Amino acid sequence: MLKLGVIDVLNVLPVYYGILKQKINIPAQLILGKVTELNNKLNTGDIDISVVSSFEYAKNYHQYYILPKLSVSADGPVGSIYLFLDKPIDQLSRDKIKLTAFSFTSVHLIQFLLNDYNITYVTDETDESVGEVLIADEAIKRFYQRKDAYVYDLSELWKQKTGLPFVFALWCVRREVYHQYQQDVLQVYDALLTSKKTSEMHFTQMAREYFTGIFPDQQSCEFYLRNLHYNFTPKYQDGFNLFQKEMLKIAKLQEIAPLEFIDQER
Image (cartoon, rainbow, N blue to C red; front, side, top):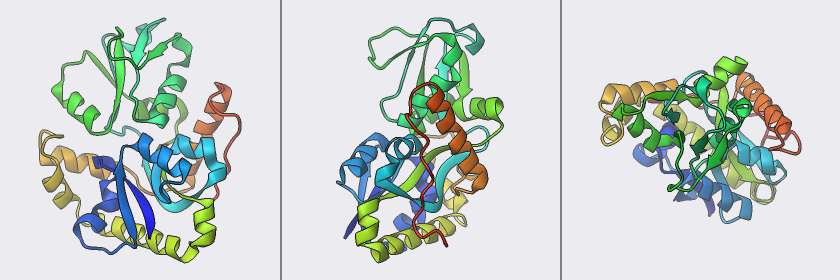
């Protein structure tokens, strides 16, 4: 049985909810983990299919195919990836900012956004800094604590700077797995699409079940889930390709990854 990576955070729930709660059958073993863990496991072949950071695909695309019609993206504010600062962003100069250890994509996105400010990035909790980047559920909880002087949504900053949406994650399969087990991979892919379609009819129910401990109320959670985008249409592909080009400019990538999909007719 194929092994399918699943991030245990809210922003991927609308893809997996049909499987987890609506009893949609998926012929795969679910492997839970943080996105950086799943990046590594897919890269080493410990799992076969997974949601991964979009930067992971860009960096190691020669190992993967993309599953079409699936992503975690935002066209404007994402609502769960924030830069928390002690002072306005335009006053930054040679300051230190703490980075999350759990997202390749966000770590590289902030370096593009703040490329002109001579920032030093740190990961040690003991380092003094003027701010930090947080992602996913932890970022949402921090945002609603309302204790930070200045808060910036990274996806909103990207949209303001480029005019395009931002793609945070993609679903990918290892190339050799697809070639060897094509029908099995397609069955998993079909189950994911069915789950996503089913989930779109249950946003209110999802929010009711999952807002506690993350959002202050059900309505805020539902707005967040509905605001995210889970397709990978040409508009979002353009945003991802621009991100790659910007990463190439600041030497975070050595080449632009072509977008190579399974079963392109789907």
